[in-house]
Amino acid sequence: MSSLITQEKNVVRQEVLRQLKNADQKTLQNKSVVICEKFFRLEELRNSEVIAGFFPTATEVNILPVLQKILQKKCILLLPRVEGENLSFYRINTLTQKDLEIGEFKMKQPKKNTRKHVLNNIGIVLVPGSAFDRYGNRLGRGLGYYDRFLQTLPQHTVTIGVCFETQVRQHIPHEQFDIPVQKVVTEDHIYF
Ligand SMILES: Nc1ncnc2c1ncn2[C@@H]1O[C@H](COP(=O)(O)OP(=O)(O)OP(=O)(O)O)[C@@H](O)[C@H]1O
Ligand SMILES: [Mg+2]
Image (cartoon, rainbow, N blue to C red; front, top):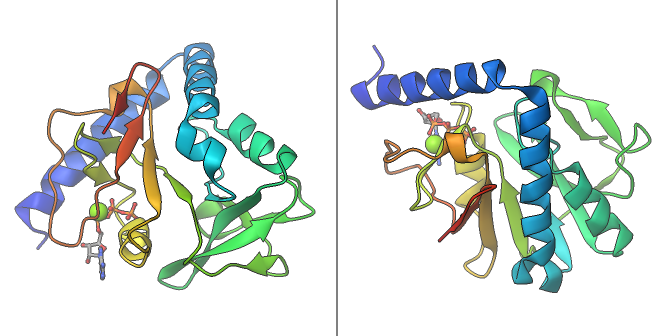
């Protein structure tokens, strides 16, 4: 039997996902452009040399322009790869199939022959999520991958949630193992 809080989390996840699937694609794409522009102006992003991102799925904010810009600036771009129960971060040089493959859960991830990266010098982590609240509490896909990863990061790494404003909820139910992010960037606000 799943706990009450697990059920509450599932309700919010399903609700947000339903909204996103019914949303107009063009509108979401326009919002993604606004979010990317916010990132281009973000001081932490401009000052970081090692950035961990994520390859967006169809219902996530399209941050590909941000990832492209990081590569153009000759910064180090890391993307997550599912390895068993955990996420490992690998350095990639292109966003093409030269460095990427379809991995677990049908998500794009770095090929194994790209370079695995240590976690102690990452400046920023861009964190996907199904929903966030304004205090950085986060709901993912319900498997705990990001929670397990975020707990291993050193204090100095800045964690930034990325989502559309419609994914920001008044209150996100959370448990001891849920790790909040430090900021949340949407098309309307930067919460921190
Ligand atoms: N630090 C941890 N160590 C071990 N198990 C964990 C940890 N964090 C989460 N889990 C496990 O993962 C399950 C799912 O967690 P949760 O519902 O918070 O997922 P989520 O935050 O939505 O997913 P994700 O982090 O992958 O985006 C939990 O029920 C718990 O058993
Ligand atoms: Mg969690």
